[in-house]
Amino acid sequence: MSRRQLTMMSLGGAIGTGLFIGSGSGIAAAGPAVVVSFAVAGFLVILLMNMMAEMAAARPDAGAFSVYAEKAMGFTAGAVIGWLYWIQAVVVIAAEATAAAAITAAWFPAIPQGVWVLAFLAVFTAVNLMAVSGFGTFEYWFAMLKVLAIVGLLAVGAAMIFGLLPGVAAPGLDNLFGHGGFAPHGITGICSALLIVVFAFGGTEIVTIAAAESDDPARNIGRAVRSVLVRILVFYIGSVLVMVTVLPWNSTDLAAGPFVAVLKAARLSGVETVMAAVIVIALLSALNANLYGASRMLLSLSRRRIAPQALGRRSANGAPRPAVLACVAFGAVTVVLNFLAPDLVLPMLLRVVGSTVLVVWVFVAVSQLLLRRRADREGTPLSFRMWGFPYLSVLALLLLAAIMVLAMLDPANRIQLLSTIGLTVLLAVLCRIFVPRPAPVPAAGHAGPGAPATRADDPADAAGGIREPARAAGPGR
Image 1 (cartoon, rainbow, N blue to C red):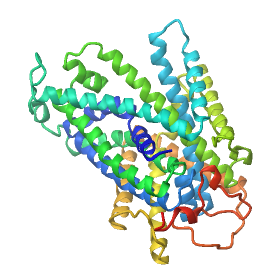
Image 2 (tube, rainbow, N blue to C red; image 1 turned 180 degrees about the horizontal axis):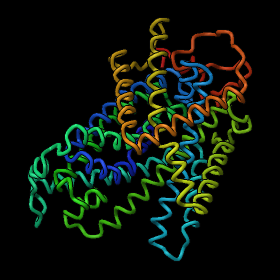
Image 3 (cartoon, one colour; image 1 turned 60 degrees about the vertical axis):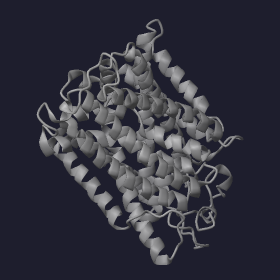
């Protein structure tokens, strides 16, 4: 995977329905001050992506944050976060396929929704069984379509704000400071919106998984993170700023569908169909990215003896075929169960994994803090270094703790967070009971702060896209 593909994949992973649809709920909660909520969430993501980049540049691995958690906190921590991410990803695969099928079935009522689900799963199974270069090209163009949709919104919104659209009155700054002021619900509204928008940034972590299969991981991960961060902030904060400037924050149209509302205000015809198509693309892109991330995580778990070893094989083109098929099979079963009990199965699963991104981010922050201290203490050179260490690493943990406290104060978010914590504890217990503990391995050369605890009987993974530590770490890269 080239640096261009890696950059676009990480960008596409962060741009999804959370922005296209979910931002309307954030606006309703905070008013124009939702921009502050997005800025805080964006700053947190900047810190976390730099943390992940530091570890991934030192030791690119398909297991990414699962491997780093194992190296930093022990075998159980790595196993738990790996399985937790995998469960979340395969549940999201089912959710995205179901949601995309519901929209397309409305366009073609003669074709049952279930047929669309099967078609989507079949297509993206084939995509993920390609060589990684083919997958990277496919996801590159999928992400590009989402980027173009956002750029289009920014262009139309700017034209409206500056009175460049004929027949459309320029709103000025009235909508930003009228209708109750910039922060009509005060700090409470900003905090409530923060709980909504922070999940919109979920998906950025896939860049560390994909880095293991890029052509120059140590260089590419740093460049990808630096370029993606600027674009994410411009796209997210810029889009939301356009929304609350063009329309009153309490507009019912804005709450229902912010992108459609802005384009309708510009008196552009056919916007509902266009945005529905964009949302389908966003859903399918998320399905594709989650299938990629889930299969690579399962591959890593298998090669570390945490999942069945049969799932650790790659086909001739390098694709982890058994892992991909296992992920699709689990997603397909979930979809079938959802059709049998639509009000029970998928909503329940989504509730359990709803706060997974917060738990993963906590593991990332703790792992980086521990591994960086270890690297500095041992004098290990790092090709990419998290800036402001340890202060910004600690600040990231404090922000995550504050978000969790806010979640506990909200009844709906409390259920999600407690369910995810309960699943995490259950996985820890099951891993302690059923997963064999690895035998101690004698030290054999320094592996850098991101290196996993390798097993003496493990085959070399370099040919499979999981690089040996010595090749990934150090100034020579």
